[in-house]
Image 1 (spheres, one colour):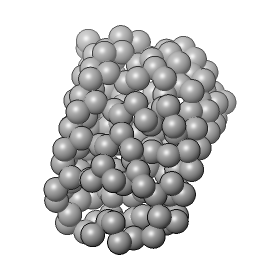
Image 2 (cartoon, one colour; image 1 turned 180 degrees about the horizontal axis):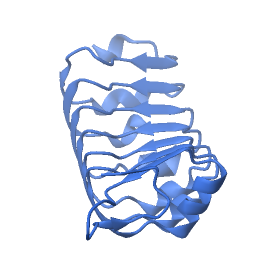
Image 3 (spheres, one colour; image 1 turned 120 degrees about the horizontal axis):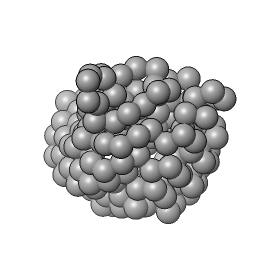
Image 4 (cartoon, one colour; image 1 turned 90 degrees about the vertical axis):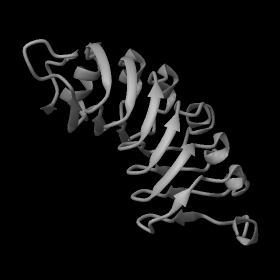
Length: 178
């Protein structure tokens, strides 16, 4: 029962436990939480808005069955985030341009979801970003030139769906195209 855990909890790692169900909205009660890792389970439903606080540095919910859009609390409260893994889920909608305000981010993973639209140019503001993955979505357009500039400076790994005769996403600076 989540209500019996100390409110001063710093790290919560429930990864690789074959968990199902949803993340309770009361997850936000841990105001000191630095790491929330629940990757490699079968957790479904939406990612609760309260999951992110100003102290959270790591949000790793990859390899689950989350649905819905990317919660706005990630970019309104997540100024301390350095690592976000939303990969291998069922998130839909567009990538919020406001994620470009999270300038501490070093890793941002979106691969294999149901995201649509274009890649926001505001992600070019993430000057600490080393890993950025878009592969396996329905994104279109052209990789913003500012992200390609990051590729020359700090970005080590940049992936997208940019292969084929008529790629959905044009990318001249990607390290991997699928």
